[in-house]
Length: 192
Length: 192
DNA sequence: TTTCGATGTTGACACTGTTACCATAACCTC
DNA sequence: GAGGTTATGGTAACAGTGTCAACATCGAAA
Image 1 (cartoon, rainbow over the protein chains, first blue to last red):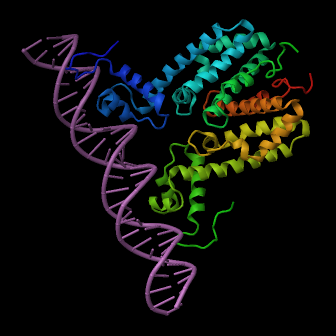
Image 2: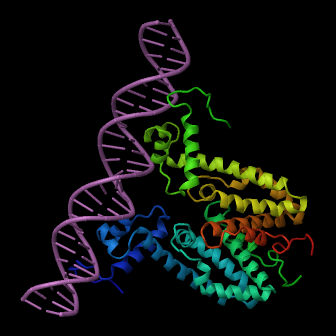
Image 3: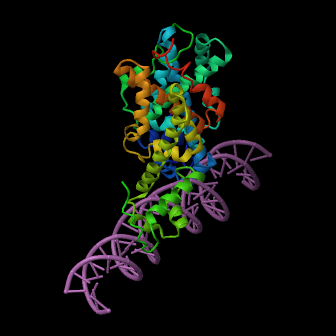
């Protein structure tokens, strides 16, 4: 949906969507903390305070960006899982997690950061979570074991993504494959 | 390296140390991004621009805070390792990593965050790193296996800390013990 | 047509990091 | 001691930010 072509747009067509789109584009260049409400408004061609007709404050705008990021990331992971064999889907999802983070650093930080962009846990909403739960359930036996395995797996991929994003580890693509490796990582009751 | 603080009290005394101390105290309350150079200067009782006699810019001040955080965290981990049995020291160090993060959220984020507080990898400087390397070396056989195990372990604890800090996982102390568990986590060549 | 609510603008306020310039106080050389 | 140098701190200002109050404009309902 392209904006209105004619001039007389005192009322911008769909300003909210335009702001979100401009915000996502800004997140591709600047990193979070360096994006300003005024800059986004300027990009769209609207006064800074116009934003407040659609979002109560800057945090709410960032929250909308984060929501878009969640959906985009879930699609990415789903695609990775679909493209993998059954026994590799677990690890494939994890690798996709890290690779999406590296491909969308600022958005990743916005989704999981403390900026209260996403108040609730992402794992509850994401349907990739239930997929993971199934995988973990097959691997682990007990209910407690399933939950533990899920959290361990989440922690590994999240930690690896964060350490790479923050420059603590090299953003080496092969390193992802080496680390996200179920043959060495989890001592579940798979094969031993 | 100790700074040139020869205890010669000029106008303020040792302003640099006072700024660092005030900054660390501010990090206990506010989280990073909400701490301002001016606020810290106000706390110490000097003008905002006096800070620039000791730090080239705000980032450098934050960098100094991060450096203090690194040392504090290393001590914490060292103490945890010393207090544990030999075969538990590996996991104990990991649990201390997460618990220190929960006890010092803003400082932890400053140490590992992308704010370029710590330009180089923390693992290179920290002598807890070499300790971890020893542990990993005993567990894994090959050199590649040692490096992989180290990164996996680091990713798990870092990810768990981040997810808890960001509210994605409950800050449950017992959950830390459950997740940082070498009996279920790593399939190294320990006991199997 | 008149009214009204939704949307966008203008101006302002307090705050931020940063710079250029000025002021003071301690130290060094005579 | 006197005088100069340098390290340290202060003032004023600038551009930029998020946010609020008051005003303007448009689309649609009455």
